[in-house]
Image (cartoon, rainbow, N blue to C red; front, side, top):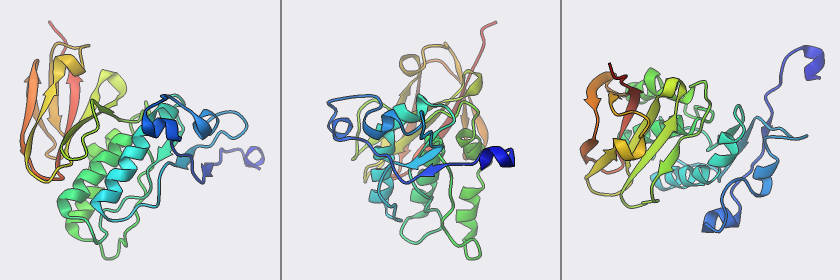
Amino acid sequence: CAARRGRKFWMACSSCGPTDCLKNGSCSGPSGCGRWIASGPVSCDVWRTGGDIQARWSSIMANLDTNQLMAPVQNGNPGHFNDPDALQVGNIGLTLTEQRSHFACWCMLGGPLLISTDLRQISDDALRILKAEELIAINQDRLAAQGVRIGPHNPLGAELWAKRLSGGRHAVVLLNRGSTPVDILLDLPATFPESAVWMLRDLWARADLGNYSGAYVAKAVPSHDHVALLLSRVLST
């Protein structure tokens, strides 16, 4: 049918989630359905990775973690995508801060950004989140990579998430999953050693923060909030 119409159909498969060995850490890389979902005779373009999402912080974080386990499948099959489920921005149940963090994390994951709220009744604040151009550009980057957690899982505190971008750039989200404000450290030489100096840009403020060669510290990041950054190499002269 697709051949007769002269265009590719977008094939969405019901689900392909992490196996038990991925959940308990006894294996790594594609396993179970992850070995065939994006290739071979099936070759799905997109597939759900977790449970049905709800407008609750715990549900957002659960699907974020599940999608993280499936990162090798997407990153090993460019152009095929893990789907952490629809955005909850604009829906009752999340604070505005949580909606911003949810949107930033979904942009980092690189899967489809599917709006699930009623756009006839959406608030101006929620609409501004959905129209954040520089965050959307991270999601739409041509490398089609999935962002991943760097370092340990910390469900009650700070986490660092990073996504490879075209042109040798990186996107970073410094996420506070905890209930109290926390300083979050980004050790640039340890995390991104390919450049001695990086230009940092705040993706929400759409403002450059300057050049950094050592550590960047996001001070007192509020509960369930984050800092979203774009890192671009600064070439030595």
